[in-house]
Image 1 (cartoon, rainbow, N blue to C red):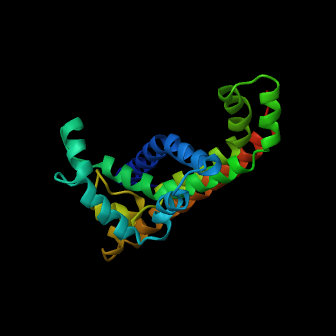
Image 2: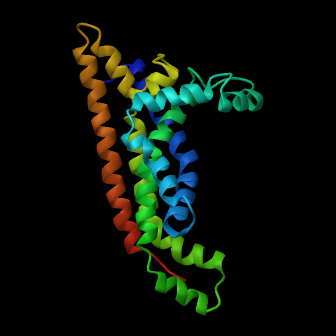
Image 3: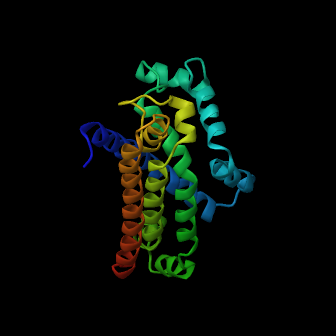
Length: 229
């Protein structure tokens, strides 16, 4: 059984990952649609920038976030003006770090799904009089929904496991920014905490496994219930 403190860590981790994915999903879909269907100069560069967190050391990503969101940084000044505070050392900052690290996986899954939509179906809908908005709502979006769901769930699992960017950007503060990976790291530094590490690691494995299984089940269910036009 988990102690109240451990349940608090699990709850904070789920909150940070959930908020990160809810806020990032519309952005990820827009970027994925642009990369899948758009033709514009610098498309390869945009694609590279979006996927950069996949190959950059997470500590570097966290350091760049720190520079951008510090009070005198370009984004930190905006946050200070809008919110009257900072995201540094706050759970909102941890959600930003998790979102940045999850974004490439989400964009990749959604983009592949959009590219897999048969363009002939969209053309057929247009010949029947459907406008671009209706074609998107009734053809493109439903057919790409399995990829959207898969991207969201994979991003959620990635956000739950985020460590390097988070500890660099918002530190490791119990009750505020200490998620499951950071809590496991902290307990590993304390002799005699093997039992607690085992509990937290087991929860991490269970949550990740549930996310992956749920993703697979949702994709299969979505595939059976697609209705076009």
